[in-house]
Length: 531
Image 1: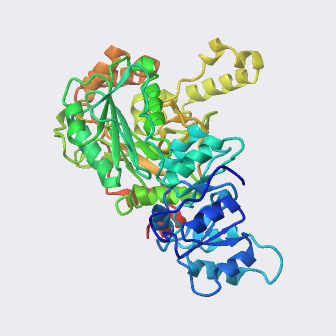
Image 2 (image 1 turned 90 degrees about the horizontal axis):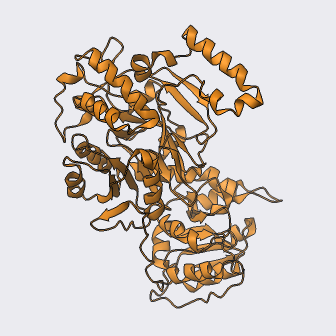
Image 3 (image 1 turned 30 degrees about the vertical axis):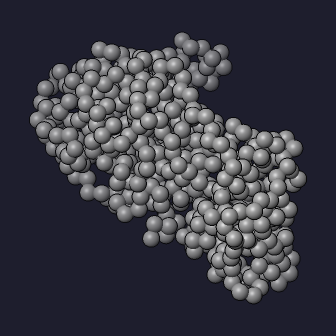
């Protein structure tokens, strides 16, 4: 690849000394050699053998063509000479392995013929870290660079110097420390930062919440995020009249005010997409409500930095979860939860949900239904009930007729579902990422077939549940005219001593319990990665 780039001297004498680079890209090879790396032209078995001739290097990097540095040389060295194998399933993301792994790869090479070095490296790597390259589906342009830099990866691509010369020059300026700070993002009308605007550093893990009068749950929600290893919290507040904003600021969260109508914002989706497009591109972000707390296999021992590194190594951009409703052992009106207490102590009870999965057109392409909310508040949605079964069968017959399928009046006859319990809250945000229906339905993301799943512990049911249901119904602030909350309110008004606890209730004891019960899924690879 030819370009306007020129190798420049760097103050450090040889910041990449000890790194051997296998690449047939003259541009990248010459640049890394100028920073002290040993450039071995080529990328096949002979190049790997030459790389290991003589003294062992600190690491062996394979850099695909048209990939260039995104970090300064010292940061590249810190990332890649850390004693870990950096490799994932995508060959275009490159790999960087330790000398020990490189020698195991050599031992597996056939005596003659071609060999897939990437496949061998991915197979033989031990506890792999994320691969070295941020990979885009098309040549990187200037709008793509913020996400590339924010990814924390030392390299990115593909670059095309002829089609996108400004992007190539900008990447060179960043790698050489010559780039000017970009202009701060601009939010759309209706959103306004309150205090310092977010300025996430590359590799930071973010959390995002939309709040309204969440002073009761927010302190423990923020504590849970810190415990998982979240680096920075962004809170969009929609007209709170309690201490929600003060609590968020005191905890160091970035506060963004949204004084408009929640329903008019597509129930917060428009606000979420705008804020994440402004500050989260290239970052992993956990999108939750204040009454939700994420757990996943091993989450009491391995935080989000380790989980996201594992998902990166798999080439995954998302984590699927099931919402698990948690509740007190007694009437909701008798609950005495105080802000800041662990929510798992105040509402430790749950039922193991019986779930069914239904296909949908949007990512993640299927949604789960069932659980205690359906049982208690939406019993008619259970397809095992004869009336529901017959309704669904008749609707399915009509759906086969194209004119009916296109008719809004016919679509309105569909059997109303209960609220889905599927959410995809943990995402590597990028260009093109978008929520469609909260985190239930999203624009397409990559998700590996063999990866762990998680659970969102859902603490909706506390002493304020009746008042919150009344407010939601009065404002019509939720989907379908707050249909869900109308159901809640009717049940509560019929039984002021309403309790969700029953003979099938269990006490939550940790993520291992949920794996054993089959509520979430672990994998052998994630077990190895978390140690």
